[in-house]
Length: 289
Image 1 (cartoon, rainbow, N blue to C red):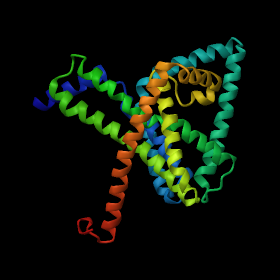
Image 2 (cartoon, rainbow, N blue to C red; image 1 turned 120 degrees about the vertical axis):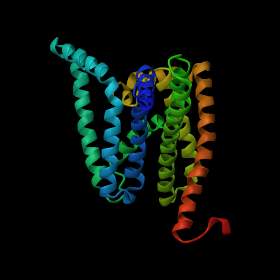
Image 3 (cartoon, rainbow, N blue to C red; image 1 turned 90 degrees about the vertical axis):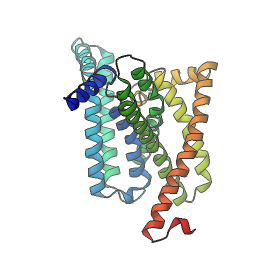
Image 4 (spheres, rainbow, N blue to C red; image 1 turned 135 degrees about the vertical axis):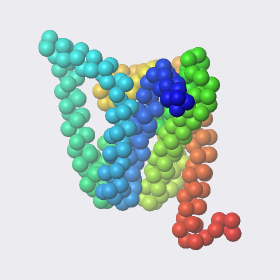
C-alpha cells in the first residue's frame, strides 16, 4: 500500500506540473553536442558510438516530443488546409522546407561518412546548424521556472518536491549545461589542432554572446532554432529590435555574464575530471602531485 501511495503521488505530480520539457530540452541540448563531435572530433566518434548516440537521442526526443504531438498535428492540419485552398505562402513554405530537408540529408551523409576535417560547403552548413542549436544547451538554465511552478502549484507534497522534482531538475540542468561546455571544448580542441589557439577565448566569448541572445529569443519571444531556417527575416528583425531596446539588451548582457562565469567554472571542473581520468589510466595518483 505504501509503494502504491508513493507511486500515485509521484504520478499525480507529474501529470499536474510536468509537460515533457526535461527530455525535450535535453534532446535539443544534445543536438549541438553531437554536431560538435561530427564537426570537430570526428575521429573519436566511432560507428558504434554514433549508433548508440543516435538511438539514445531519438528515444529522448520522441518521449520529450510526445506531450507536444497534439499541438504539432494541429499546426500541420492548418498547413494542409492552406495548401488545399491554394495559399501561395503555404506552398512556398512547403517548398522551402523540402529544400531544407534535402540540404540536411546531404549534410548528414557528408558529416557521418567523412574521416577528415575537410571544410567544404556542407561542413560550413553543419557549423551554422551547430551555432543555431547551441543556445538550446544553456537554455536549460532558464527552465528553473518549471521547478518554481511545480513547488508553488499547491498540488505537490513536500517530499515529492524535495526527493523527486528538485533532484530531477538539478540533474537535467547540469546535464544540459555540461553539453554546452563540452560542445565549446570540442570547438576549442579543433581550433588548437588547426593552429588557431589564439582564437579560442574570442570564440568562447562570441558564442556566449550569441547564446545569450538565443536564450532571450527562446524564453521571452518564444522563437526556436529552426526559425532561423524557416523564417530568417522575422528572426533578424526581432533580434535587431531586441539588441536596440534597453530592457532586452540588459537581460542579454546579464545572461552573457552568467554564461561566461558558469562556463568558466564548469570548464575547470570538466578539464579537472578529464585530467584525473588521464592520470588514473597511467597509474598516477593525483594526490602525489
